[in-house]
Length: 130
Image (cartoon, rainbow, N blue to C red):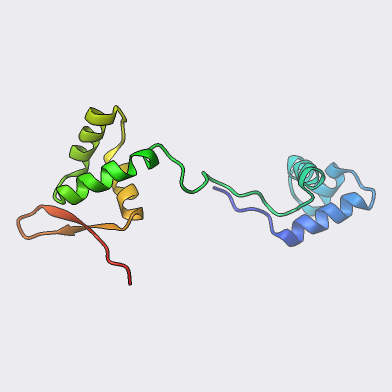
């Protein structure tokens, strides 16, 4: 994702436009694109704020969230389960296709970590708080 323009620049562009200059002139004056200045003023009119909108997906959403308890119970019941095996179980029992990497990231966000063991395999364990 790209970085948002600073609030200081946004305020200066808005002040320039509110002083009677067109949005396109403000864009040329401050070295931003025409659409940036136009959309900034639209945002100011609609919401009253010049702050950038939140980017990305809202937290707590995603296709695995409804299956969180199933995934956690499965991993706690069999800590040595691999992510491809877990993906196969999810597909078999719920009909949801999920990449192993997606499952791994999901479990890491829920406090699980992957511990290697001497036999060359590994075990997922839940991190303790504190």
